[in-house]
Length: 259
Ligand SMILES: Nc1nc2c(ncn2[C@@H]2O[C@H](COP(=O)(O)OP(=O)(O)OP(=O)(O)O)[C@@H](O)[C@H]2O)c(=O)[nH]1
Ligand SMILES: [Mg+2]
Image 1 (cartoon, helix red, strand yellow):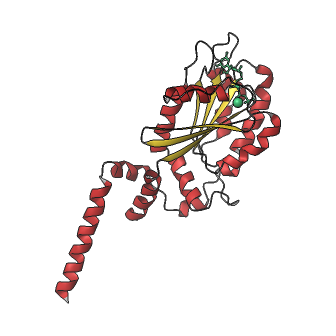
Image 2 (tube, helix red, strand yellow; image 1 turned 180 degrees about the horizontal axis):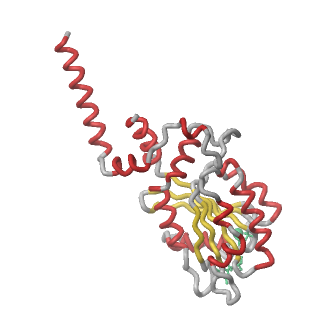
Image 3 (spheres, protein in one colour; image 1 turned 180 degrees about the vertical axis):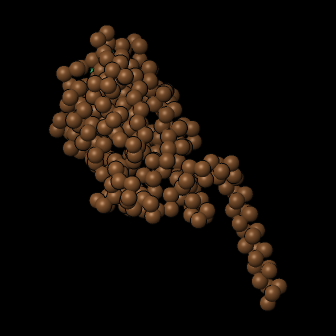
């Protein structure tokens, strides 16, 4: 049983590639946020920010992970194509214009579609309450109490809401928090570990797995237990391998002696 946990854990940590998806309505500030992240990563921001047709992305390494961040166009006719990116997403960052109350309801409707999509099961969701520099913007807490984003997310995924300023003179608020949160969840999030395991087993697309049901196929999967992960984190994987080889050699020698 222990080796099954180790196998699942290794599969998660041996592949440091992680994909982050930035979604939200048009004009929310997604591309501006991506640009802010690019600057953080020591890269140049793209030219003037214009409404996105298709996708923008950036790649960088941080905290032992290779990030690929995709920002998709948020206009209504582009939203249908978001789902083509769901499968590979390890985190969804959902951006809201905190100043545009007229669009809150529409934004919440789109958000609900996301979190109930089967290809986003167990995926951590971070909401960015963006444009906090605008004088009439609502705070993250206020937005969440009005629209119940956290409640809608349920108990089978990690949720966070962060205040951001992605453009203008006061920009750089929140971008580094998002990256730190991503790294933390890549290392420690038990739901994300389940998601990766499901995806690698080809089960993420299965209809019968419900993230709301306790009684699902996940119980039968060799998923890493978080306590086991902590123990393993303190072990040098190379040493474990060497120890295992040593044990095998000892057993072989023992067998030979017995023969
Ligand atoms: N004041 C203020 N303006 C912002 C902020 N973030 C973005 N903006 C502005 O909002 C407008 C839209 O920003 P974008 O980053 O293009 O928005 P988007 O979500 O990528 O929009 P689509 O590509 O159409 O989906 C631009 O004029 C930005 O300068 C912010 O934090 N504060
Ligand atoms: Mg854009």
